[in-house]
Amino acid sequence: MMQVGDFEAVVLAAGKGSRMMELTAGKPKCLLPIGNYPMIWYPLRLLEKTGFNTAFIIVAESSKSEIISTLDKLSLKIKLEMIGVSEDDLGTADSMRLIYEKVKKDCLVISCDLIANVDITPVLNLYRKHNASITALMLPVPKISDDTIIAGPKSKQKPETDLIGIEAKTNRLVFFASASDFEENVFLPARLSQKHTDFNIHSKLLDAHLYVMNKWVLKYLAFNKSFISIKGDFLPYIISKQLAKPPKCFVDDKNTSIVKLNIKEDIQRFCSETYLDGLSREMSSFNDCNSSLDNSYHDDIIRCYAYKVTEQCGLRANTIQMYSLANATIDKWWEFGSNDSKISPNATVKSTQLQDCRIDNNVLIDEKTSLKESNIGAKSTVETKTRISNSIIMDNVTIKQKCAIINSILCNGCVIENETVLKNCLVGAKFTVSTGQEHSHEMLTDADELMEI
Image (cartoon, rainbow, N blue to C red):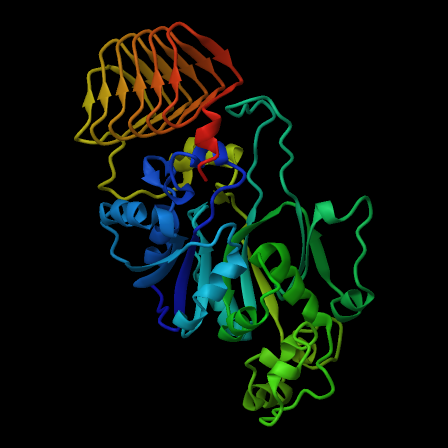
């Protein structure tokens, strides 16, 4: 386990899940179950394995008590400081701005929806090696087979595609944009190809929403309140600023008031590179500029990097599609502890037909039932002669006799009455599906429940 005492960890968990509100209407996004663990357990466990002993968690104030209660039951060793925020539609940059005064060191920022079994030590080491401004983790885009069917109404979900420019030898992150920003052709700044002669534009990398940030970057975010999202607007901005020349008046002038500066042009003034840092860089024989005799880093004081993982080891569960995929694949690539049991000792399972299922606490599975490749949440009941396959059953769900549940998601507290057939459906929280109904590719929920968040 590496030493991480020079970093602080921040988990972003205040998001409402705007792209999966059918699921979050009944439960905070960070507590949605994945493999019968709440979503937020995975990034916290990742931090623990890396060596972090403490972490800040930013949560919605309205969900704070529920999140605390849930985490208290998970036997995590990491000490957590919960910070509740009440603002509506709070962006990730906004969240970091609100806790700026609490963060005293460089920090690792991680999203609650990152479900990844990856060693993040190389990310920290890459950051340290180059005294970076920001270093981001990039994963392969999850592979989804053409015959994959998502629970809910049929729709052509277009996955977001990012265009990510990374130098082949140095891992310098030199370009970042959404493919949707361009109609047909991608135009790159002329100065980019002049400074960086050997980089690739990747379209099949996933920004994992795991960033290592220099303390000065947080200071700039706190000062410049125009940024809302780290990925959406701040990351492209700071990457582009690597190409900018520092202003002519860039000197260590204690008499110059920073309030008088144009902050959009003078991010360099916030950079923490000291005089000695710059001097050692100039005097060093190290040169990372391929095919160039320029000084190391092209004399850039803002330096962004990306650490690429080549094997498929995770995803971001930020859409219904990715949430479903996370539940379907979690046992294949997440290393659960030896004490982890797929069937809780507190569950009552009378069925002899269980295949690749996870059964949570206080679940009742009656006899003459068949369950295959499904997760059953706490305090749920599955009555006799019911079949369930490839489905996610959340907490306190009641499925009565002679039902068939296929490739569906049943949210908290819903009731499925006798002889109901659900295929590729999503049933909202506390919704009741009446006896004998058959539904396919539908979202069954109360509009009022969806509008709660």
